[in-house]
Amino acid sequence: MHGMFIPTLAFLMGLTGTMLAVEPEAFAEDVPSESDEPLIAKMQDVYDGTQWFQTDFVQTFRVGGGKAKKSKGRVIWLRDEGKGRVRFDYKDPDGNFFCTDGSEMLAYQKTENQHFRSKVEKSEHAAALSFLTGIGKLRENFNFSRERKLEESLEKSGKSKGIAILKATPMAADSAYKSITFFVDSPTGEIRRVRVTREDGENFFDFQGRPKFMKDKKGSPAFSCKAPDGSSEIRGEK
Image 1 (cartoon, rainbow, N blue to C red):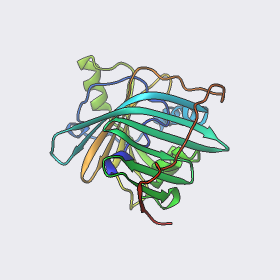
Image 2: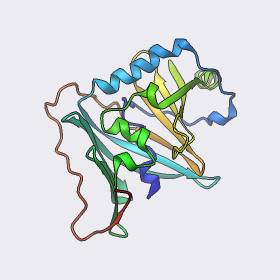
Image 3: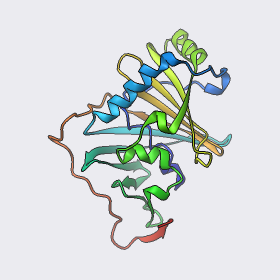
Image 4: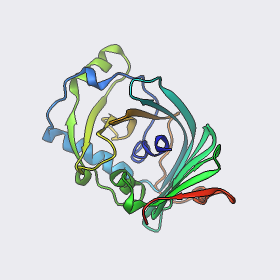
């Protein structure tokens, strides 16, 4: 079920639209620049100012050199009592879902009728989940570098305009992933695409259309993070 956990950062700070893939490994990594600090601050501000949103998503996951697999569904995120609450409902495979209420995270697999439950603070994805729970700060969890050659390639190919590409490497030595690459709309600080790289594979996560990130709670959706009755439980660390 780990494929469900990987993309947790993707929606947190305002993904909008879809981009065609270009592999970052084909380009040399640039050195971090102080000029990137305002952009990182914009990304943080988008997240900090959002109270809730919901939108459809497409997730593309590849393990090693294997064939890419796609899933899709709908995500809702809302801030409540100082914590972020999120739920991914998958339509393909239908019935699977991942959620966190800010204290625990839960992933349900319909075909096996089982769910995994763990405390957020004990999760191997702690840095990513800190954003889900409303306390995450980019600069406290990641080191950044700018991938300007990849930006130039996308610009020349006509696949993007005004897109800045920032590679975030987690500060935690025991992180579950190697890096997260953010494709960011420079004027707004909204993230259009995220690429998560692990030792065993990679994950792309895209929002469909242009979701609205609401700054007040009016119209926010109902939220539930409970396993279906009768499903068996696999519990992580307490």
